[in-house]
Structures are given as structure tokens and as C-alpha cells.
Amino acid sequence: MESNYKNMYEAMDLNENDYKFVLKETSSTQIGARYTYEEALLNDDVPFKFRSIIQLYVLKETDEKKCIGMHFLEVSESDFIYQVFKQLKVKIQFYEPKAAGGYKMISLPFVKFKKYQADKWTDKHFMQSFTLSNLALMGFSV
Image 1: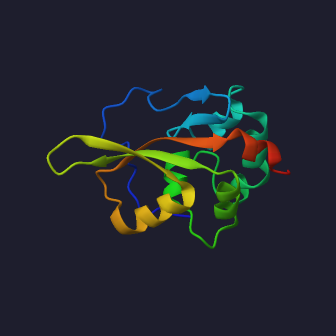
Image 2 (image 1 turned 180 degrees about the horizontal axis):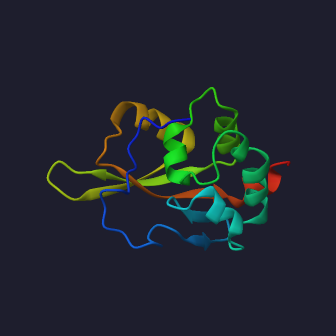
């Protein structure tokens, strides 16, 4: 699937590993949005169950070289993977440009993010990370 969105990271002066991280907490796991699915599959810090979900569901709809953050922008409500992300209680952390300059960080559940994206997303926004609920991940059957 071709993206209607330009790569939000291209215009930024980023190092290779900027926005590529895994932060595990008791109730959630936060993953940098610049990971490709291939990089996530190779990283042992990414929860095994999420890597299994990538292999079983995500890669049926997109390429493993796809940046996860860019894929979130492309997913539509009619895609099966939309329901998977909804069930995993994915939250998207992104930066919204302020009119006076600078950025404001916003964190939204996946469904609300998609509504926000449809109404307000511009080329000046950029995604930092996404969070998976560990409880939702544990309850997800593969």
C-alpha cells in the first residue's frame, strides 16, 4: 500500500537510532515509532507476543521494511490490523506543533488518534512512540 503521507522523519536531522527504543514498565511497553517491523522482530527487548502478532497479522498487510509510525498513519478502519491495534490498546505519543512555535506532546488511544489524524494531522506533526498495554497483550490470543 502506498502512503499518502510523506515520511515525517525525513526532514528532521536524526541519528540512526533516534526514536528507536523499548521501555518496559509494569503495565505497559513503550516502543519507538521509528522502528521498522523488521527491526522490531529482531529486537529481543520487544515483547515476544508482539513480535508474534507482527509475524501473524501485520506482515500480511504491509512490508517488514515499513516504519511502524508510518504504518499507523496508513491503517484505515476497514483494515483487520486496525482491530488488532484497538484490541492491544495501543496509544500513540506524538508532537503537535504550537502556533507560537515549539511542540506539545499528545498521547491518544489508537482509535482517537485515527480521528485526530483525519481532522488535524499535518506534515509538521511527528510521532515519537506507541505504547502497548501489557494486560491487553497478555490477553490477546495468537
